[in-house]
Amino acid sequence: MIRINNSTLVLADGAIFQGCQIGHSPSQEYATGEVVFNTVLSGYQEVITDPSYAGQIITFTYPHIGNYGVNKVDNESGRPHCRGVVVRDLARRHSNWRATTDLNSFLEEMKIPGIAGLDTRRLTMHIRESGAMPAAFGTLPADELHEIAKSEPGTSGIDLVSQVTTSESYMIEGDRPDKLIVAMDFGIKATIINHLKRLGNVFVVPATTSSREILELNPDGVFLSNGPGDPEVVQGAPETISELIGKVPIFGICLGHQLLGLAVGGTIEKMTFGHHGGNHPVQQVHNGVVEITSQNHNFAINPDSIAKVAEVTHINLNDGVCQGIRLKSAPAFSVQHHPEAGPGPHDSSYLFDDFAKLMEEAAK
Image (cartoon, rainbow, N blue to C red):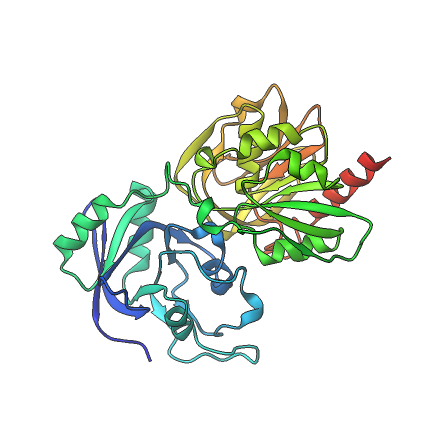
């Protein structure tokens, strides 16, 4: 049952939005995080359980959320790492043969607080104009929530990968036991692992794993996973990746893409409100083909900073942001978008085949 307690969301700049409390009730009567908006029409469960949302409060722009419920199969990780969920209208009843529970009960079980009934359109427009920013929401008075929001650090300069990476390595058996892919876990999604399984056995390692430890496994390829937050504070990862370049084929997605950029001397920029959604048009530079992609990032590679060592392979048609790179002198490439999510539905899945070809060529 959805609670009707009054709840207030206050942004760090003082903007106030009224709603009602849903999901988990935090003991301190408030939750904090960096507010972003996501434009997906469906897939709310996959978004909420994506580790890349660590430290963030997710605002869904689609007005009606929760109508098909929740099931364990669609989880992208063992538990959500987001700080909260904001929706316009949370469905009171769900209807889907796969569902095992409703979204509100799922949020309660996973201890994720939420707020519903507020004007998500106004909130989204505010974020577009002012940028993603810290916020606090809960049952405390608005002036107290404002002070709390102003003290929330957001995601810049915060190491969020350490909160989501695996603590121990583990093996996933794939369709091709003759191939081994080492996946560096910066916040890897279950669907990515499912795609990599088609290409070989997948050995998932913590984000702090050294290049020596990875090369000792004699992998056919190394995958750099998605993950949350600021790539410049992921300790040791760019150096590790730099030591792997040229020794083994590399494929990176999202945060892994940004870390590959850092590894070759590139610079990273914080975007105003980031890309979060399932309807972003991305163009392949070499042939002009446009893909409809899933996105979730607040940071991006400055393409000029990597021009000497890499070529830009994809761009976002909404704003021209760099969406993909390929190194000129080593078998390594990466994309900012999520080819595993498939809102196209299969527009970008060829990238996993490209990784397979890269591994085959390196083995010759």
